[in-house]
Amino acid sequence: MKTLEPSSVPISLYIHFPWCEKKCPYCDFNIETNKRDGDEEALLFAILKDLDDSTKYIGARKFTSLYFGGGTPSLISAKIIEKIISTLKDKELLQIDCEISFELNPKEVKKEYINDLVGIGINRVSIGIQSFDAKTLSSLERNHDACDSLNALQVISEMESVDTTIDLIYGVMGQDINSLKKDIEIFCSYDISHLSMYQLTIEPNTIFYKKELSLPDDTLIELMESEAKKILNANNISQYEVSSWSKDNKKSNHNMNYWMYGDYLGLGPGAHSKITQETSIKRMIKLKTVASYIKDPSKTIDTIITSESYDLDLAMNLLRIKGGLSLEELETSHIYIPDSFLEKRLKGIEEKLLESDGFRATQIGYKFLNDTINLFN
Image (cartoon, rainbow, N blue to C red):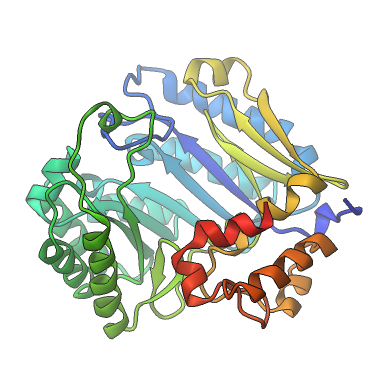
């Protein structure tokens, strides 16, 4: 691999708080449900130490975005969040226009609490609605109900000082097309600028994996996706990434940095990082349990992306962007494109999976994205 320029690659920051009230049966994130007195402060100390130890990865760069994820960050004291943001500002690590996102469950979306978050620097919130349908929420075994979902949207749509995204899940056991259409229509009826819409997948390390579940078949899934697209497009809400939709160009800067192959530093138990080095890409995962991370916050499990695996690693990210990128955008974004990548791109064009202009999947290539990505294996 040629010599890369880490200083020219944008970098974002992800901070993971692993605690939840309960573990959702479809969730494969790194979470714990046993938070004790003193754990928050101990984790804060470890995160700040980890930040100090990560100077070698950050260099002279400033974070373009900051994302508090989990778990359920809204279970953490606002003072903990404020301490992290103030430390980052004191160290001059945040860009002036830094997008600072914070995840919440619907039950925690209260006007006073959102105002508190805005007061400490949060300018974007992500709400795990999942559905407005009681039956769907019951199938997912969520710890909130349809009333909580609707109340959350009512509160947040009245707050002009913060951008908002919500999560919806489709392809749930017992869910029909009308249920999903109603979910989308409710979303569109509020002044919310961004939607993350995910198909339920059953991952091996989840509670659902051990059960025999009857999921909607592929025909119904396709119909769900088609009907959702019609409603969203009719409301000027456009898909810009596999699971992401926005209006008024309110894309997630944090997620776009992932897909544009920017760097990101992950702090907290089980957090992932991707860091550009001079001759390779380094991917890191922190120790997963709270106790192990607190004991050694700098310890990571590392994977080095070299010339042999670089093309696939790059394609897995760039091809998620629906509108693709021009070759000029790839260059101005300081994304290294080796000759081997360009050769595979030509093969994709021949197979009608990639467009001939820039780097973008065709309609059929985007529909069968895994096949398109595997061209770069």
